[in-house]
Length: 233
Image 1 (tube, rainbow, N blue to C red):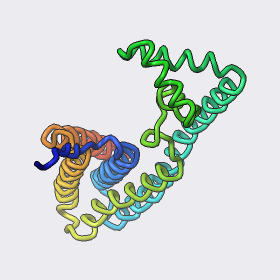
Image 2: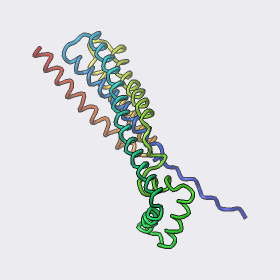
Image 3: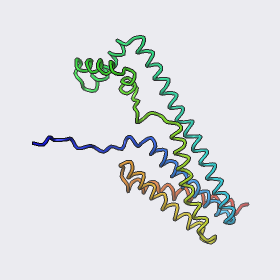
Image 4: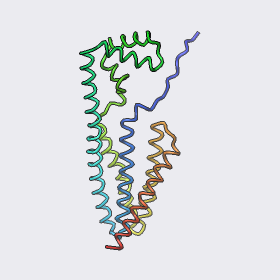
């Protein structure tokens, strides 16, 4: 008789750290650069001026994304480290109280009090700090802040995304620059939304419609502002 083996379950939560930074970076790269290009082009600028503005937007945006992600995720990391230091101190000074606290957490989750205390004792004997970090503070290997990874991922993906509408500026004729860049960028955004949803196990149609709608709205508003100021100036 063959033994029954549990079928492996496929989860996507372990991808949230890099996936969020990657999708945000690429989406922002496409959208901000395409909007900048459309806005400058609507102000009656030459194709060369539009390309220069787009390249400047790519460089500035990539640096901004990297710096922003690094600072924000570093703040999260600092908070995590401070909590771990506080927990380490409490474990050293009053381990019995920490044991009671951990057992109470398991009781609130539905575990019998005697079993909860036994489980808490066994887990704390193996790695008390890791146990409290996970079950009391909600920290895990998946959710741990990684500032450098977030910064590099965001900058790289922003540059990749921004390069797409810039390529359309080079390939499209000057007379059709705005419609070509707009249509291509919306296509890139839709593709990105679908890929991000697929990678994260989310609804593909909802993600695609969402990112395309907001992309079209952003480019329309920017084009309107560019046209207005181009006319005034």
